[in-house]
Each structure stands twice: as structure tokens, then as C-alpha cells.
Length: 342
Ligand SMILES: [Zn+2]
Image (cartoon, rainbow, N blue to C red; front, side, top):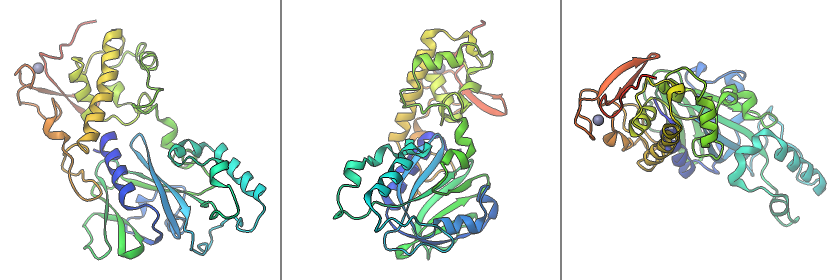
């Protein structure tokens, strides 16, 4: 199952190949991949005639920021604000509306300031926001960038057709993956309601020692389960929870209330470090993960405990064990990660 480093790897790949090319149309092969509240025709109409300005990531969600393609007539049924020959104060009002919207928080990288983006009449008109395309890969989703002539995979679910015969294809064997269209007048959080429940990003300032301590200190549940809770910190799944606990020498069944301040501090550092290391290795190697060019990641070969039950610990040569917790497998070294009785 793709976790933060895999989704981040996909995001970076998408930013390399998909930006500023018009989406000319699409084909939805499995209707339920398109998440509510919009229908399949609304999804396709909303995307047609747009370009992707930038891909963002929040937790395990991918968010493509859409703009109306410049030379494109507005798609049928899709409203484009009439701004081309309006006085500049209208443009300024529109800018303020964008800046005040919750979606503005995803726009750090764009640096849309009124003074630079809307300077003179000589500049080309600012791009018209056209909403968002959201994607969650869930268990087995893959986004592939390829030629439209490439034969369809058995599990191809959604095709988005770009100029020059290119295609962004969503392939998903287990069919839990989802795609959303978010219209420009709504924020991603309003449409993709799962975003509302997400805790801070692990690399953000909000994921501080004080925050993490506050989240853990009163919870009588195993730390492994807390790490999988996306409301505490976003983006961690089974692989990196097991790896961070090993590096911190904490047994996965340790109750949050039994963790010392030093352990919490160490765990937070190791979460950040292991996610960073995996992003640098372009995500992990597991059966169904591929980046947009269809290539597997490299982290898996260097895992400490994840997927290594029965193999010897790289630190102490004890056999790695596996146990079931909350329906998931936890991998750990019984010597390096002793369960202390609180
Ligand atoms: Zn060990």
C-alpha cells in the first residue's frame, strides 16, 4: 500500500511529465473510481479543457491544481469568468477570493502575489483557476504516463487524454482507489472530506515534539496503532511505522501512555528520517508500487524489519518476528525492541 514516500515519488514524477498540457478528454472504465458527489460526466466535463499547473500532496492524497487552458474555448457547461477585458479591480477581487479560500494553503509554490501576477496590461492574463483533480491510490492504485496507443492493462480504470497522444492512466487492481473533481468555487476539503481528518504533515513545523507528546501522552493504545492514525500524523502506513519503531527501539505494542519523553522525541526524529530516506530512494519496492514511468522504488531492499519476519535482525541477528495488531502485521525485533511492562 503506497505511503507518504511512494505518493511523494509519484507526485514528483507527475510534476515532471504532466504540467501545462491540455486535458482533451477522458474515459472512465470503472464508474465507482470517480468519488461522490460528482458524476462521471461532471468529472470529465470539469477536466476537459484544463491544464495541470502543479501537483501537490497532502498525506497520501494527490492534488492537481487545474487552470483553464489559455487557447481553449470554455468547455460546454463549464463557466469561465469573463475577465479578459474587465478593469483591474475585478481581477483584484478575484485574487482576494483565491487568497481567502481554504485551497490557498496548497498554493505555496505558486507565489501568486497581486503585485507580480497582475502587474500591467502588457502581461498575459493570469491563469483562470479551474478547480482540482484529487487522487487517492489506496491499496494498489498506479498512475502511469504513457502513449494512448499503449495496450490497456486489465485493471485500467480511468484514462485522461492529453495533447500529442499522451495519456495519464489510472490502473488499480483492487479498485479501492478514488479520483475526485473539485470545482473552482469549492475547496478540496469540502469535496474530498477525508482531507478534513488529517493531522499535520511529518515534515511540517506543526509536527513538533510538543504536538506529538500531547497526542500520545493520554492514549492507552499501542503506539503502532497511533502511528497508523492519520489524524495524529498524516502519511504513515504499515511499512514506515514498523521501521520508525525499530529505529527507536520501541516495541509496537507499547502503550502510548508508557512512552518516555526521550522515546517520543526519538520516535519523531526517526519518523522524519525514515520517510526522508525512502523518498530519496524513490519509495519502497513492493509488488504493486510503480512510479509514473512504471519503475519500482528502492527502499524495500534496505528495510530493517518490514516484510523480514524470519530473517535475522541487521542489528543483533535475532530472528525478526511478526504479530497481528488491529488487522495489520507488525514486524519487530524481540531483542532490539523489548516490551517493557508499564
Ligand atoms: Zn535486533
